[in-house]
Image (cartoon, rainbow, N blue to C red):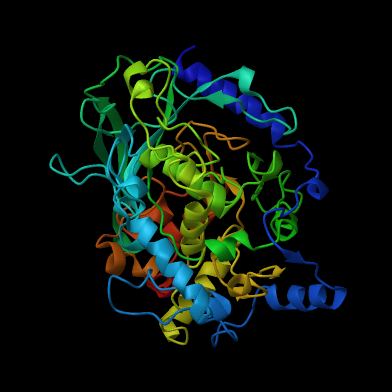
Length: 509
């Protein structure tokens, strides 16, 4: 099957399941200690999250992006590395221990340092922090002398044998038979790296109103120096830079029912926006759950996202992914036969459930910095442009999290992440043509926008979108297509001053 035939097949699959009914009652937040809402709470919440029509002043609590968990914005590169603003002294200790594990450099087996034993044998980075630099956004390699340490390439092939009957219209895929689920561009001694990732770009100019122009760069990816033979001829790949880490626990605590209520797969309201939830299989709970994390919402919780990253990115096993050889395939026999760090002391894995829980707790409690300049007249004008242009159809400004037992930092908070957590078709220009669970090759989860204005300060660059192709916020907007085509066109045609105000608003988030 050619690449074009694969794309056509995925489009046909998409046409079928875009109209498939979703049984919302079956999607419970099993991973959260939820206290059910009362009828009066539901009414209060509906009034609070209703969109504003007043752009003369900031809304009440708008500066507190993460509710009571919001942290004071700093002017250093550590702006994304603070614990939730409402965390207790005792729980902050767990946060700091989790931070230590997040930053820890793993070493290859066998080693005298049992607690750090088990790297690889094939891997992308030696620690979580090496990809999520300063807990911020990664970037594609910048020239031939730079590595792809904060970017990875996912791999998959269509495989009907992996269909999940419990999930309607699941697009069944499996790993590349030789290289697995992603390209590992490093290997421990004696194990060649799988490949070297080469990124090249072509430029195209786009005309804006009032004589302005912007230039968009389209990436092309090449896997050079393949260490284990050719990839499958039908392989689909997707390049992805590491996302910023702030607010994950708050996103995890948005009720699934609230997210599903925003879905409109058949565009019944006729606004051209047809957001859909991704439904994924939870290994922990052995049933379908709402996908929340990853650029296509392929993981249902912070815990499973963390375990998957340890497994795929560092080659560290856990009770969820017990294979000590990480992502190595049967075709990589030497890798599978290599010593690993699995030990009874760590639940017969390389990181114990306690260790994984601490890392997940750290990840869930990286505080969201408060807004800056919420009452600035240009920011308020930009906010109005954001609303009137239709951006809020996907970038839902605010939510109220579950009331939670034993999880006080995320419990019953009014938050402002600017995401609906749903999948949207963003058109062929932004497509990676690689499905994930129910997500097609043109669909992406709406990314949260909180903290986006601090990217340069934290990460030292201004690269955006899933693969870092956009070099500015304006370029990121101009890459929008598909369901967002009309909104993008409005941005292109609006007065120059309104475009500048829109970017100024985004920079305040």
